[in-house]
Image (cartoon, rainbow over all chains, first blue to last red; front, side, top):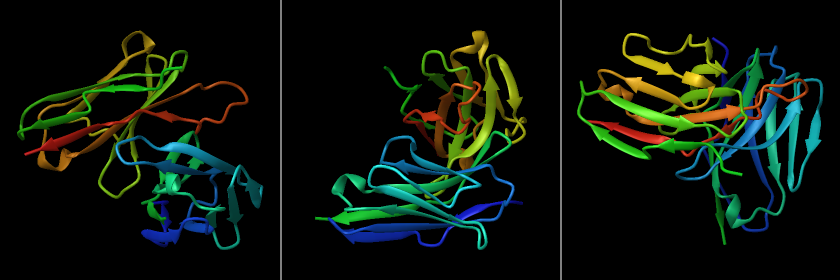
Length: 110
Length: 117
């Protein structure tokens, strides 16, 4: 069936560096793509979304890029901070249903 | 504003025993979701309610899982009997399904970590 997956299971960066988390998706009919952050012992938290007809969207310190040609989604975090350490999931929304990928563990070293 | 509340936070049971999880969504949210999250995986939808109606339960293993959302507010998810493979985190989420609001703006609770021994 359709699926959303991640290229890298773990990512370790130095505090202050920029982080890039990647995701591949297969359902070209998805309406939105979303990034969630999940800290230990908590539920996923919405970070940023992008509509399927957009290429780029910026938030506060985060940018999401969508490349529909290769079905690739990325999350860029600027000036990564220790509080950014968490598991990041990409998800796609289609027909009111969210499908999550496997997650990338981001570790920020002080 | 209080977030999604779930209880218990942790539950350890022996296989073949029953177990129930409770969720109280954000006040005013008409849509409620139950997800199962295995270690290192993303959440997988089990059931979605709009008010009292289960509008998507296609992924709910109906032979042992059941859910209810009486009065369209709180919800309970039950497993009977539990199997070893049911060990996971069970997440509840809620959203306000309304014109102009994306359905994926779901707010998640902290989850119930179930261990079946």
